[in-house]
Image (cartoon, rainbow over all chains, first blue to last red):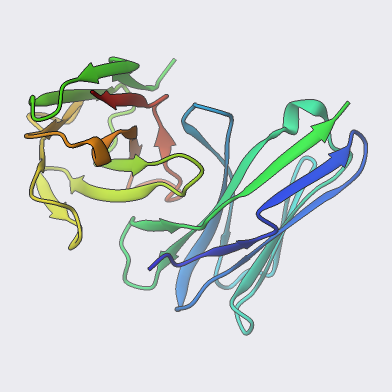
Length: 112
Length: 113
């Protein structure tokens, strides 16, 4: 079964608004990563947060990790039409050794 | 630019006709992965290589095989494609020396007729 479950499955917002996506997982992890996938393309790595970190920022992205709740959130601020894509969380399990399991994904649509 | 390349981008095969997908990388990464992604689903790991050490996922069908002749190249062989094998196949790499992020190719979309 998949490690990560994402919520919501789909999200539609206006350009300029913030978008928040959540990821829950089941077992202990070394790190959690977020990836973006444009339609019909490969995935692009966005940000990685380690199990001993609680928050990380990269440009307009903010990721939080709560290991006690086994959950993470990705916030995209001031969204743009170009942010329209699917977003996946991916967890590297403790002892996983470079292997990650992807969540179900959130499909984000940013309306200009 | 260093990158992960997949050929072909689109592949059409017939039911039961063997097909090979290829992946090459200029990143000199130790680890290479093959994922299967069906429409609106998460990528599913089929197998990965740490250098030449092959690691098969428990639920990867025997119909799927892989070869990694050198650091740069990795192949996915589907011995007898079924209609259920139609999907996007994604190759990715990562470096043990790096931050565990994976670098993906653009994918090969496989159609089975």
